[in-house]
Amino acid sequence: MPGWKFITNHALVLCLIAQHPRITARDIASTIGITEKTTRTIISSLESDGYVTKRREGRRLKYRVNPDLPLRGETQQYKAVGELLQVLGWKKRKRQVKEETTG
Image (cartoon, rainbow, N blue to C red; front, side, top):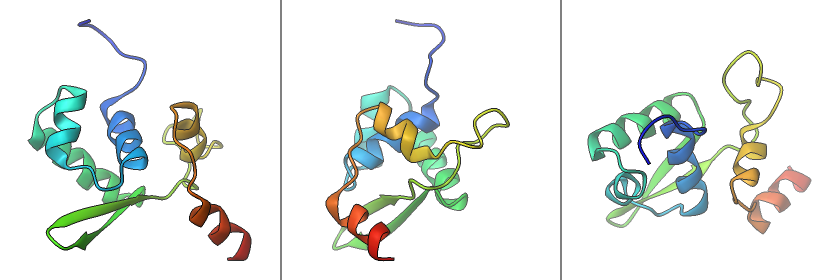
């Protein structure tokens, strides 16, 4: 359905990365319906702002989302990005919950 969306491409990319940490930029682009170049630009933006970190595992990348950072925008800055991700279906991994309680 063409037209406007409730969720931005940045949020969709972040959500897919959170749900599938080993997803490729090509798969993200295909799922969302944007170009791979746009996807890589969004990932780079999310990474430079600290929302995503990535590390190489063999020939692939593994992403990790920082769910504690605030949403962007003046009216949402008091909500954590993890809260949005949970509404969109993301479930915190047990390891992340354990790190938060011990760290």
